[in-house]
Length: 151
Ligand SMILES: Cc1cc2nc3c(=O)[nH]c(=O)nc-3n(C[C@H](O)[C@H](O)[C@H](O)COP(=O)(O)O)c2cc1C
Image 1 (cartoon, protein in one colour):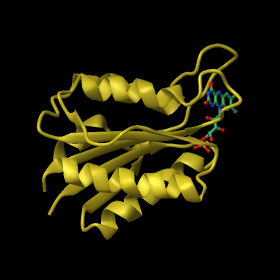
Image 2 (cartoon, helix red, strand yellow):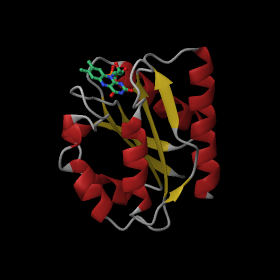
Image 3 (cartoon, protein in one colour):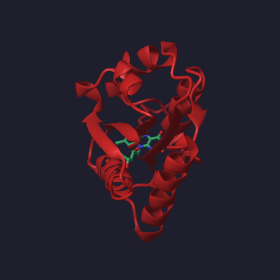
């Protein structure tokens, strides 16, 4: 049975809901799935999983889009890991009001790319809360991750 670790950061709940949609979709596909809020996780939790998922919102303080402050330390630890042989996926919520829409997703993708893991699904950026078409995309994201894992 394939296993998955989802780590999420969420300030107002949108990304938590996104992470929970992915959790449910993976579980429905028979994947043994753990979900952990980022401040309760260490990046090395991914070493125990076949499928590694980060869901993160984007923050800014008048300048460029930034990682959530919960990601301090976590992202540094992540990009030092050797996750060869595993697949990863990144999703998250932002707000299209901002020029740097959901750029934390791109930043986590770049961090995972340094680990040797293979991207198993296209990144997903959700505008605020997930709506019906986002849920469809997140369910496909989960299915693509499982297929890419080869399990
Ligand atoms: C002060 C502040 C700055 C933000 N900056 C950005 C940004 O640069 N880019 C972006 O896409 N969204 C930005 N957002 C929007 C959040 O990412 C968005 O509300 C998201 O849905 C929050 O996710 P959460 O409910 O999981 O916390 C910002 C929100 C706040 C409150």
